[in-house]
Image (cartoon, rainbow over all chains, first blue to last red; front, side, top):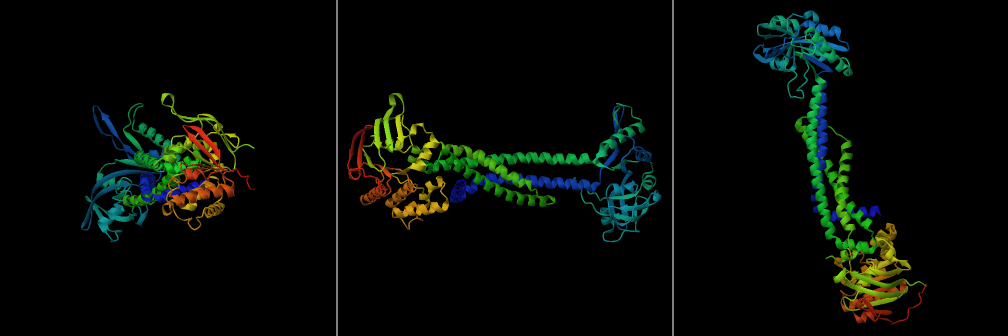
Length: 399
Length: 236
């Protein structure tokens, strides 16, 4: 019986191809946007996750904050190399600690020059940030103070192009240093900034020969396990408060930045976008559903005599209801099918345009069909009930 | 033997109070199985109302209608639908076939509701179309058939379920006189060969004369009830 009713539904839909296609358009768009949205959302989270992983694992970064001197806020005093050593000594679960002295200036090699950042650090930095060595090597602890440098991929490209930079010299201000290695490219991060635009030098070289001070501008800490991050973060905070002589209750003049939090904030932004677009999808499903209801009401009126005939022949009200409900559900499921195809195509296009990796989320197809069927049942019920409630005698007399 | 149909003091009132219209007043009527009854009378005399009640499409306001002893008034909508499905066939003045649907599919329709499997459905529908003289026309849609042929399809559809009662409401009303008698002959033959009880509403005297029994309605009452031919014992 169900099969016969299903066959009737398909037949009725085939009879009105144009009308059915237009009716399902709302569902196609609604389901399509749900599919596209979830797929693109998933692709962008995957991209953020990949970027975070590329940035380095379980990273904390300690920065000086601002300090209050009377009514004026000024940049707090920087760290010293001893601060980094103290962290390494006193906090457990650490993989690597790298102090960072930052400087910026124009790097010159031959006829090329490029404005970039110079980061004075230790060899731990390369590993903590997860950089891979392209050519040559990274400086060793014994080379602190020596004029050697390692080039980020962007700097290498700007200064040397296709030439081999190893052994060449690069001048920053009055300091001339020898290139001993290059790093492989990481590309842009989730914010779109270039992660390869820097020159690495030994910490002391930058301190003594570029900056002329013993300041450390930030400390990069890599935690051995992700689960230890909160504990490590609070231990660093209390250690630094103690070393910087900040009284309990007093505002700290530094902060510990958790890269994971940044990632989560990014995810949250994506989540908000998804929720917003999801609302739009829900509205188009609603409109699509109303479209189906509307066309089913028209269909019931048009087919009043047919309903009368069926009832006279012995169809029960329940069977008439089922027939019209089935038509609405088949219509919306066809819309759902169209929507899934449209959504997958759209998300492929959007991912390509946004430079996201193509992602396929299998469960969304199930969800799409459940949504479509639910819309069909919900909006098909009222017209179907109207058909079932018709009085056979009046229905037969209907012109 | 219980009569197939028994109406006792059946009234059907439309509306209420001052404007109430009494379509049927205290109608008592019994129809035995195998009979061929013509119901006649001027328009507004209550014959269509009576047909609707006999066909379980409508229920009496008061009085009782028993079909094979079953009190139809005590049945709900679904039970009445099931009674129609299994025991009653309808033929209408306007044919009432499904448009854009072939003759074969129209005849199969009641069997779908009876949940007859497809293969048997097809076989029985073909057989029935053959019996009404439409072999070879099974794939024509109503629009491709003449009025007389359409009514044959309707008769095939009404009888394919082997009902005990065939209700025909002005079955020849829309046809020219040659076709009228063909349809009447078909109904008479089905009554004779298949033993189906036929109740036919008509306003044409020459149609009514062919029936075995003629009942005339006037103002919602039975005005006359005469037997024209003896009710033949049903041949097994």
